[in-house]
Image 1 (cartoon, protein in one colour):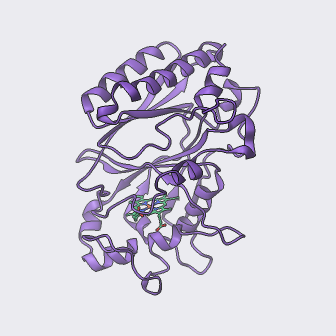
Image 2 (tube, protein in one colour; image 1 turned 45 degrees about the horizontal axis):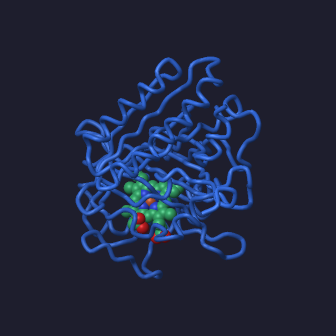
Length: 311
Ligand code: HEM
């Protein structure tokens, strides 16, 4: 494919799910931008090449730049819809913002490879950034969230993953890039597990074991899938591509929620519908059982953009 027409996307943005993940959140040291630009391009290229080398283990990943750091790093232009994380709160439902300068997301079916690559990436960044947070995600059962429900079923499939997640002609300079939102949700599993299964199913809007969507008329207005299934002014479905995975250990565990999208409004509207509800008192009851600890907004540019800024 012609690079002019379609810049090379970072392959982790649209990749299919796999077994393990590592999330690295960094902040940049003062005044390192001119060294960091080529370094980020190298890290993204390294990840891109490993996708071929470890194809058998479905390795993939991406590097994304924080909304609040973007202008310092790339003063020549900004993705049109890049905004800080839309922090919000209503009663006990909290979606706080916690921003980072850089996010490296790597995934693979072999954990040893991920460990190796995570160390290598940190080495490549040495002296330029500080590692602030690190989590490891894993596939739980047959693609279930730790609540026991299958997660990802209604994600876009095939080529529509690119259609949903990658910026197109609407922002020529940032074509092939993606808006990335991350929220680390810590679940209150003892509270959740005390709920009868039918109550859990009403909260999600799907059955638990066989993962069947409720009929439209049976879906409570407070169910998760009712709250996030939104249409725009033209009646078109507002979609995101979710790359979430369970994370954590016995002490703290939950879902590392990750949305990639060609715009930032779809995620924001969904989150608003979960937290603030529909204006008639119907918010997302899943939020009674999980708490967002972070909320970060990034942009994952195409490899071609990163290279063009490296010199
Ligand atoms: C669907 C879990 C947070 C957006 C689902 C489903 C589950 C789930 C089990 C149903 C299966 C599927 O289609 O994937 C969770 C959990 C969350 C969480 C445990 C946090 C703890 C979010 C957030 C958003 C979101 C923050 C967006 C702001 C969606 C969307 C769907 C979905 C768009 C597909 C709905 C449909 O078309 O039926 N989620 N989710 N989720 N979730 Fe979440």
